[in-house]
Image (tube, rainbow, N blue to C red; front, top):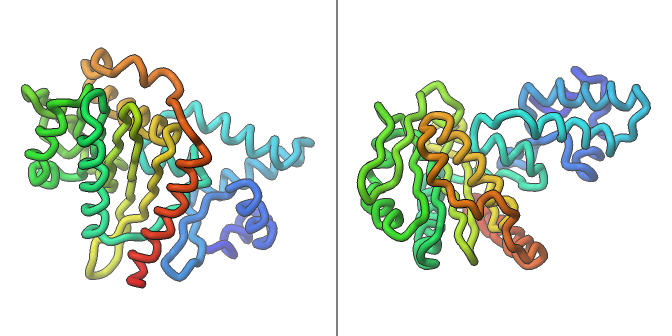
Length: 270
């Protein structure tokens, strides 16, 4: 819905919603290529929750923090949705599938170049898409601590020397997403894209980060989704993922910002 429609349904003026978003990253909007905001249906209830909390005497900051704390306890339905909810500072960019594949390959190659002890999670939507990349992923799995592929496989599988194959139903939110997450000592990167309907070309709203803490969240979300369908994976998850990652937040945040700008320019054809 538009910001005007969200304002009408919540009773909060559009200017106020823009101010909240600028200062607090709330409510969460997706951006069209034109720059216009669009809001998901569930943002109506989230805004109303904040309004009710403020009526009870909470400050705006406290009301949003309470909403986020309650949301954090809920299981995530997908990598993209989880990052979008937990990390409102990450802004999605629309990019075509051809570019998404190129960026995914770059992340995979960089992860592989950093050698062993990596954890790789990929969401491929369809088994056929994974089979196209299977040779690459088998190569990655040889040196990784753990590699997991999620797609509409018929059944769970743990092929020797290959990623775990975790089935996802076609009605699952992950079936509409493309994701690649690499968490390795000294290197972190994640990309999660939700496909949207665009005539003539497959386009994804993409979140991207190299911040270790963001990537750690993404890999945990992906592994939680995988172990829910393949419980034996739990014993293969490296213990280090339970600890906070080492990070230089200033440097990697700047790198993420620059990379987002590059992606935006490329996607716009400029």
